[in-house]
Length: 176
Length: 400
Image 1: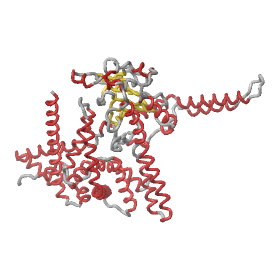
Image 2: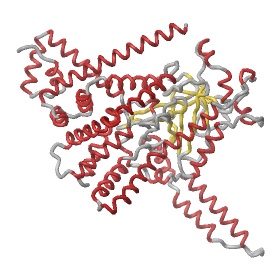
Image 3: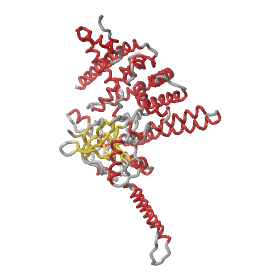
Image 4: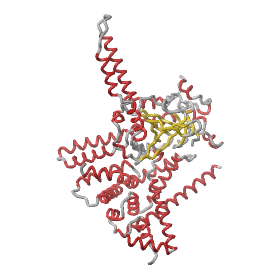
């Protein structure tokens, strides 16, 4: 098994998962992962493989995001609207899961780009040094970044949950 | 030692501090109530954030199970989609055709004609049919070890991450993805005059891989949509007849979606693709999965699916599988039905696709949850039920 094969088998899955969480789109994540591995193939030597791959993938996402952020926002809005129109009670488990995912996505979107990336990399198992390398941070600031990211994520999620509960309470009150 | 800051606490809880510093933090947290509270709080925040992030992996309707690590270890039988039943069927057909040819071309005499063509396929079939044990194994693999079929995502938004596939893989499996990376790398290193040709080949392959599941979902979804939007006789419509009667009725009723879906799936069966079964929620209800269902008045009874069954997820190492399990009369979940998988159609959550690897007749059924209250009963309007009267119904049942 050559280096490319090993690299691919070892990191493809976590990288795609990281990118899917980051982008909310598996196809897009697969494309970015593919481009990342292509660049790895061309690279003569990579010192810290995991942080290198995550850094390249993150940069590719940023480049892509800058290009079509407006278009995607519009699509996202349309998608959310379609989902909101579609959902009626009762609330089955699959719907709850979908709603949780949508809330999580919204909450994540409220973080700054750096906080979001640091958090998702940490959840993918990268250590502080790898995160620091990938995001060009100092290792000592990773803890602070993660603390802030986690706290904001939880707060944003709870706030969105509260809003959802209030609006559904209003809805059921109006219905009765 | 001064009070701990949040960054240090998180680094400590993440195991990112050097041993000496970690010991200092631990010592301080034991003696300082204020910092101990901060540590407890941070633990909760870390766990909460992890849970929220993992919620991002949930695909609407559970249609995008994570890819299984075993995705490359498909059995040859599964890869070839060759089952004993199919092998026997193919052999029988060959024998029949060969016999017909021999009989037609034979000289008109009473002398028996020895035809090696008759014997050959039978032998071939016997050789190609796996032993019963292999069959069991293949069935288990089909059900449990089969890699999660990638995505069917949003029909409306051109689908996203979603399921190894029950429907065709929405994204290429790792091995194929690796090959694509290698080929693309070659393309980029190739001389300019060769680039166009190679690029086109790669792009075509990629497109065909990505387009297939979307096309299938779109085809089936549009078939269902046609049916649900078909004109009905409106408020004056009589009570919906039983589904079986509706199917038999020769009246100028709208073409039932089941026919379109059967036709679509029949084409897939002919093309060697897994057969598809579609569950439709006709009354604008969402399909509650995982959950247990009872087949009510099926028109075409699917042999593998018992009267009561459950749609469930199981977590295998490295991925989630969507399984169908038999449910007994007492509501207890029983054995897994081998070879059948399910997934919610992307975007709608009112359609369930079940698929198998056998060329069985296609069946569509709809979900009709039992009314829980007067409000629910009102919502389950009879005319919406009538729209899909041609489809067999399923009802949600309690299970344990």
